[in-house]
Length: 303
Image 1 (spheres, rainbow, N blue to C red):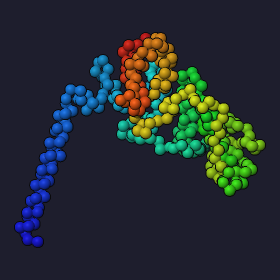
Image 2 (cartoon, rainbow, N blue to C red; image 1 turned 90 degrees about the horizontal axis):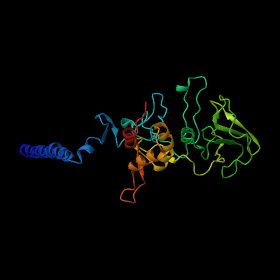
Image 3 (cartoon, rainbow, N blue to C red; image 1 turned 60 degrees about the horizontal axis):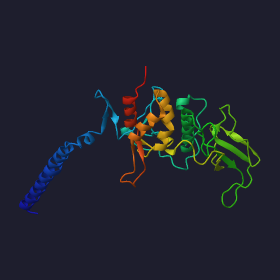
Image 4 (cartoon, one colour; image 1 turned 90 degrees about the vertical axis):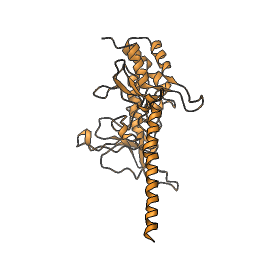
């Protein structure tokens, strides 16, 4: 290739680089920045920050947050958000789900010889749902029982060991273990026997994967008093909204804590409930931060 052709090709590439840099690196960002300054858009461009009356930022209307004390206990005067798997809770830098699916029903037991904080225990999705439902039931004064959960809030799951048929089902159980109830507790398994075999508690270090995993439904009603969004995290872990059903469950507690009537809390709840998008897309939702802010303004705690 001649030097003149080589120079011409490189000069064309440099010009294309300069033009694209001017368009995508300078002009486009400036246009987007200018549009973001337009009235009605500036607040959204700045992150939809919610501020108190004194101008102090309270959070973003697009990102959920916890309303708990220093020990993680729910503050009774506030509506509570749904659970979050993002970091320690609603961490935008750790946005994500727990990656636990419907088949996550067996806990990883912790080493009883180690401190509880780092003994290796890992709850299954089923146990997380069960424990959250029991806790919310106690907080709100309702029955937190759910199908496939024990009364104290772990997954009601058995490992049934014995010979199997051609379909993989155990024909005659020889041993049955409640896999989510370890022997280091003082409690007995949630059922005494299964098909005539005594149910054992689980022991750390033992492998029960050879057994057939059998979730036990129990006598809990199909429709729990605790809504699904109260016990499950969103895919991002940052959902700022809860369902009207979960919000209604919390009305009595918040009203009592603030010393006002339930009707007054319900009025604030209606103010912060958004219907389906365009009337048919999605479900109605309640923005927790906006609702709690209105409550602090209208019904502050009395000292």
